Image 1 (tube, rainbow, N blue to C red):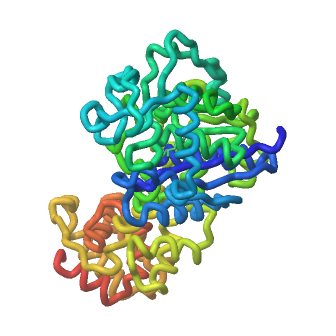
Image 2 (cartoon, protein in one colour; image 1 turned 30 degrees about the horizontal axis):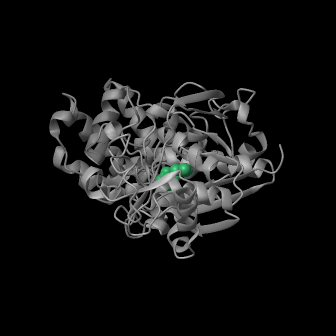
Length: 441
Ligand code: GLU
């Protein structure tokens, strides 16, 4: 591969969607693999849609995933330099664009015409918004390097899109072409939902006498329940997923494989390994399905790769326990959690005396807990001694092991699922364990 120059061009309009991060990672890997260049360009010309802190959150997320950029641009800062107006004027003077004065009448809020052929196209206005004069009867096509297919439109289906608004701000269609050309972008990668914009861009490239870059659209990520990925079963924003307890390593590994596959069947990748293995022929033609079980599997895998110390830090935001206590809990939960947030359900009872729903107990809970109390009172306070005492009790009394421990678990935690219960009892301490069991004996 020759040196590839790619860019990630997000608009600071809110929380980054997982699909956008995937696009960024593909573009990043492609340029780094070829020892080319990766550019971050903030596309903020639509000021109405911008959210406060949007740019910082984009940078923060890219940093979290170790994506670094070689150059950085903010489109709104380039407006004053006149690049977009100059390009729009060329289109006007060459007869490939026209002034439009009915922006308010025939345009949706975002400034784009709803009609394919704009009523102002042949009116000869000399001021106003500038729109593309789409040619009659032309075939527009390009080869999509991601889906590996030639895509063709007839110009009768392409819209006289607004390029420069009457306030002098470019729309996405003009700014993206001018900037991709100016910045020497060799490969443009953007989500599949941008595909309808591509014929507009191709015409603008042609009329500005610029060579169009290679363009590719990674396929849409599908929801397991059908349609495009939606929030039905959990977050689809990067921040939302992190808040749900997914590790960046797992999110990364999961999403790079949603639409791309290596030549071997390898599944586990670090960013460095992904860059090394990256090959555009690995892009998939069919839509990937967002399989949460798979994501959970990756997350569990990466949780178990962490040291106990690291996990104490990672779990604490989800359950702010005393650090020393958390250090002792971590080995008990490390093997069983899939998401960091599960710590709350598994271990909140260490700190807070639980509300116990007595209907969860087995029928024999009183006798089980009476006998358990004897062990709690008299055993040496270690997992080994308590286990021995419990097992001997179960044997001599003819209890069912599962039922005995379930009752003990519920008395201690209020829950049917906890880390290994004898270990939990030891961590709670003798006084606390006795205080918790006493109301039920
Ligand atoms: N600004 C567009 C977005 O927010 C970028 C589309 C493109 O990459 O061309 O996704």
